[in-house]
Image 1 (cartoon, one colour):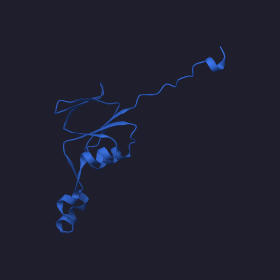
Image 2 (cartoon, rainbow, N blue to C red):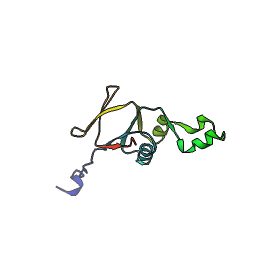
Image 3 (tube, one colour):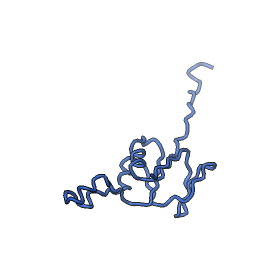
Image 4 (cartoon, rainbow, N blue to C red):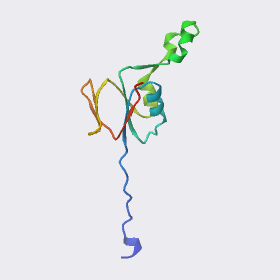
Length: 117
């Protein structure tokens, strides 16, 4: 068969990894923000707002207002191109690569990052 009639070889593409990040504080947010949009990232945390506590002294001294130390977690994650789930993780099943939440969600993952400290 002439080369012009052959079908082009298709490259096998690996499925996009599903990454679950448990915790949306410094470590979890930094991880999510630095992961490329090509990954399917879900960040799970029970709090709707990230509180930037290293600046608490500015709040106490009156330089900043409390609202300036809080950021909407969903917006931060959304800007990075990922998904935020406001919920509490109750169980992690590493054998089956599943995370369960108190809201009765079952989330599958390929990589799970624990950032709850």
